Image 1 (cartoon, helix red, strand yellow):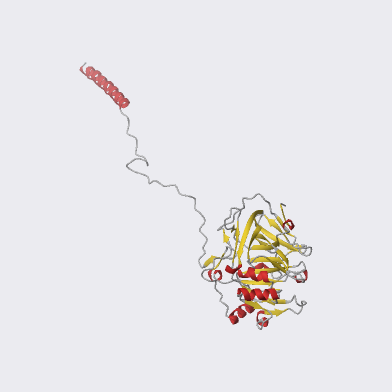
Image 2 (image 1 turned 60 degrees about the vertical axis):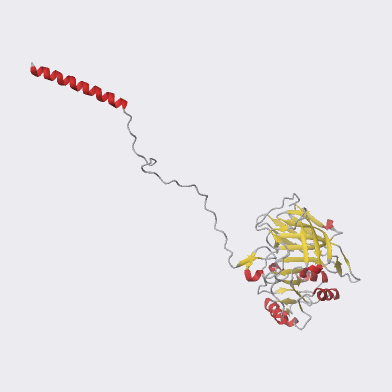
Length: 367
């Protein structure tokens, strides 16, 4: 009996203890285990960063060209350019070296033909020409760039202008003619005079011309640092310049490379040296008052101390501009519709000097 009582007491104690444990389990909230975000083991906070960008282009040893707004070797950027006269009749086409010009001018001379003048940042070791004679208004244009003027022959008007402006010139009709130029006997004279880089540099050395820009030279143009579209709605995807019944060059815009390809005499205008078409980023049409200066049909124009209107054309569109020139200070500037100095896209520029009484002969259109 005693053993039985002890067994009963043990059973009662076990049941009591079980009840207490169950109650305790329901009253206590267990402490959560430590995690990576707990104070005891903090995780470093990672700040969000921008996506990696392309490394900036390295332009060490380079500077912006005053002629194109593009990066060129520093030693080139400080050098005075050369302004070289090019023949532009069908018989003498295609010319050699025209694609190397940073800027290409075109204006009527006599008989309805035009002449070209290239402004060169740098000369390559290629044939240049054929080189033809000077006209006084081209002399004035060259002076705007403080350029050394290269030509083979001149009118009396050009001779006077060269003397008046104190132009540094390399002329084929001087004692330096055979140094700077040579004749290609396979081509009929006078369309067979060509220049070379070696000859031009040798002539410059003999004449002891200053080859660096003056320290106060401001440059002819203002350029954007990157390509920009015009806000104008005036389309200019084709540009036709009806200089005369003999010469009506035109340009077509290529959306892919954003350049204008030049055509004349019914075909692509190419550089004989490269076999490639001439292309330009910018086109400027500068309207000027122009007239015959004598019975021979030689032209003259009002550009000495004058102003006028024009077009700036780039990226398939056209905007109206104005221009002002003071020949005595060498300054010629273009202005936008708001009267601010024109800022252009970086690249090569073609400039047409066109009679202001024939603006309808400059035809702009979309494709």
